[in-house]
Amino acid sequence: MKNLLTLKTLVAVAAVLMVGSIAPADTIQEIIDGGNSVTYDNLVFSDFSVSGATDSLAGVNAGNVDVNFVVSGEQVTLEFSPNESYGSAWTNSALSFGGSFVVNYIVTAINADEIDATGMGLDSATASATSYAKAASDLYADAGGTQLAGQTSVQTGMASLFGSEKLSGYSSFNPSEDVLYAESTVSVLAMNGTSAGIGQFSQSYEAVPEPGTLGVMGIGALGMMIARRRKGRKTA
Image 1 (cartoon, rainbow, N blue to C red):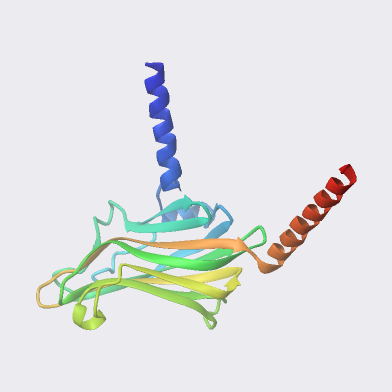
Image 2: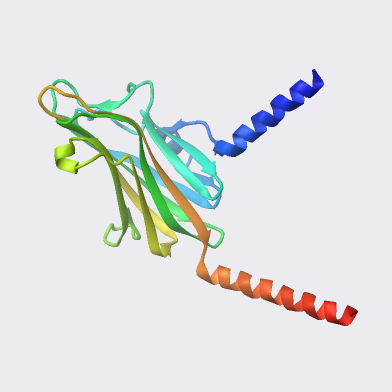
């Protein structure tokens, strides 16, 4: 029995290591009320807001959008989804062709790190040949939104418009950025009696040591190697 319990414990630990650590989901409003700043690994996420909700998505606000943080190695992923108070998906209504809303927040690298890549995924969505579900993100290097650092978008449906579905996207930054201002837009559009909806979309970020820090680390490692060689020669 003891061996069985030990095996179960090892399996559980292995499962956690495989998927990374997952924090409980909060509404964006709860994050705002809690100081509007959360830190995972070497990244700080702050200044969250939800704005610009229109038409069939006019009811979307900071109180009914959940955000879940998943940490895996040096990557932090934000999973956005509607909570139970809103419904199971952001979708068009029978009285509207579609709608949209925007999630804004800031990503800041700490501990001498820089953000060098971001990814986006459309994790749960439905659409057809005459409808689409889309999430797109503009990432700026300045608060004024004049220095565009990168863009990524994902969508499904309406092949005539997009050519094919794109359920994941990736963007790297050269040079890497200390701070990114994210402006992520969710939109749905449907025609001819069809429907479209998004149950969840995600955004991931990776932070790496800045080039100067890497140089210092390299010099330090080289110094240690030289010291060891000298010590070895003296011993000989």
